Image 1 (cartoon, rainbow, N blue to C red):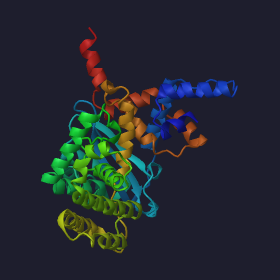
Image 2: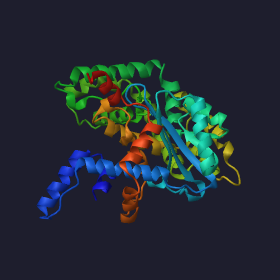
Image 3: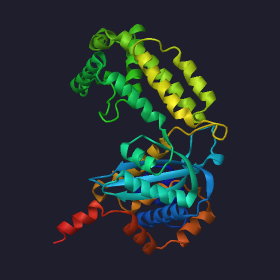
Image 4: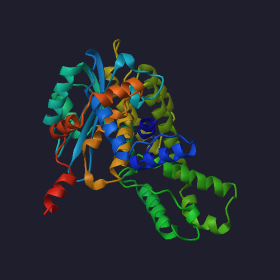
Length: 391
């Protein structure tokens, strides 16, 4: 129960221990809750067990891979895999669908390093049909050297298309500038309830829909007269960009529909046709620019569709969400850097049963985890810090 709660929620190890202690007291159950350190050790053991459990050798493996920066220079490479024959193209992937293949950190990953890891992957799995990534240059180089076909993640492809369309757009830049001015001016002011959503500079093109929905909401409120004259005056700059906002909202609506199709059903001849039907409406301005980018994406990544491969996984969201959960854990103690707690990533893939949990915990010792740590992880920030300040 504690393990299920940890794997399915973002609660900290200490919080879980206290939560289950309170539940036991409330239900008058005479049993102690495992300590936070015990739960953490169990998660590491389960992660190690999942990572090293034998994988089927087959000719239809698909891998999803990414490298994520930690604190400082450390980067962790994660490769998850699934057999094409076991892929359900009627829904998005779940983390429990995946098999953890590689979890490894280095201070710097090169294309050659990644190619070497991919050769090990091919040796252990058999044939890798293709890999889904965010098209980072290092990953692409590694895949090319390992002679593995690359499929570009649709989420990042859309974000790059939006960046190319809007990054230097004068109207968009002025609109975002006005939104930022209002946020800084009114965050603690009389009209703080009206302020635009915050957009992180690093991922603003991935989250343009948030700004679009807010803008459409403002226009709707003005039309329906649900705000005071003073509030309307404060948002007059939004009303002045009505045509721009309507176009942006139309684009976000099309993007949402395309994303749902491709993430649920994969990329196939049928889904390509559905996406092209949606793009037919994009005949002018920024909509037309997006249409050109998407048609090029569908054409290039659809080259792998044939009689043997009718659908392609084209989303790496599953690995992004996994990294998100791990980073949430890191944020509770950022100076520790990448430690053996990274084993929580493969632990997330487990289908929890009593038998599997018992086997995982009983078959792995603390020394085994320490040996894995020394072989697969670089020195953490915490260990470097201790070495400097120990005296």
